[in-house]
Image (cartoon, rainbow, N blue to C red; front, side, top):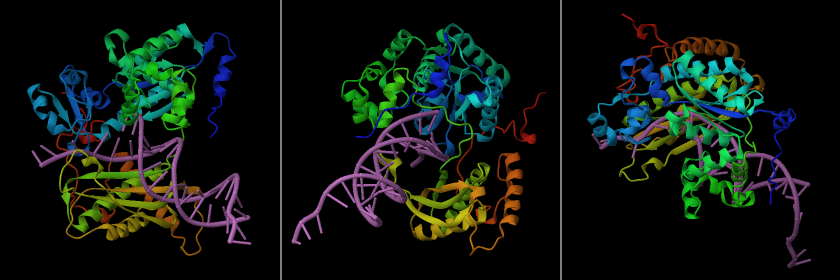
Length: 449
DNA sequence: TCTGGGGTCCTAGGACCC
DNA sequence: TCTGGGGTCCTAGGACCC
């Protein structure tokens, strides 16, 4: 049996030493983020139902409150909701990542200015965990409201704030804040044992952070239906039934004992992937190679942005299934892995390796619906080992990469690219309903007449 | 003929998140 | 007809070593 004891959080001990004042964790979560971004530049849509689609206009990934009310389902396929959408005159947008990325940065920057960068952990494009400064319990509610108002005032994006002693309870608080915005004013604080009990009793197990579909089904089967019932199970039980240390941690977090630490603001990724569905099935090897070269370029940019180099590369392609079935998502990917001669962040070296892997994978006569590139075994690029067998052309290449990145990043798009990435792009995804890139293109800026 | 116990490293796969 | 993309963490099990 492994040791499942979890060390007490040292920062927590520090805070306990000051009587009456404690530090709590907050989660700040943008409300219907993608929809809010679209509405910012379309005030006419303020009280109208809005949805935003995933890449390839496949699924619905963001819904305004009005769209939720009329019954549009989250993550549901667009085509199934289409009649409902037309019937209620819902505004529909393709994903506009230039816009969302820029507004996300503004929201996070606001939090960093309010609290100090070291207290903010960006958790996703629309969420951040925040370590609140020490304060007395009665001050917490107003402080959370202050955060919410400042972000909205500075960026135009409305957020919900949940506060509690642990990350899991903060997420539960945030869930409640969103459930009933009229009452909560988008802020919910769970500090006392009584507040926590009441909250957890009202939350269904499947709405709890850390419990996905598989565990929810298992737990319900065992008669555990509320977050409170789960909280009252033993740590040893959770270790046995919910994935070992992960489950044990979940129980402790629900009891208010912080076990999931704040991540360092400057952590680097351990794996980088770029994968896409094609707009339509592809059956030519040259088109697949173009797509893979494009994805590799994108992945290499991400790699350089975090100052890493990759030691290995994996390419996969997914054949178009002959028959559609319920488990179509699990279409089996054909993949090939290659170790690079040495860690690199140079786009054309990565493309060369990737394209070779396509040659090994591709079968004439098959058609494919999706492809992707994954870079692994990442190391800091300062640590790249010299290799006797590779001539030191590195400097010139590095200079070229820097130049490309500067130009492409300032436009948030790929203006400059390698010829291998192609210029036809028949395989490109559909994005028929994309709004203008208001904040990153001069020619698409918002006009006031 | 007899054939232990403990450690590390790697990969595959399952679960979760937004 | 049409169902996204990009990550993390953890465990189990096999190979290998002494």
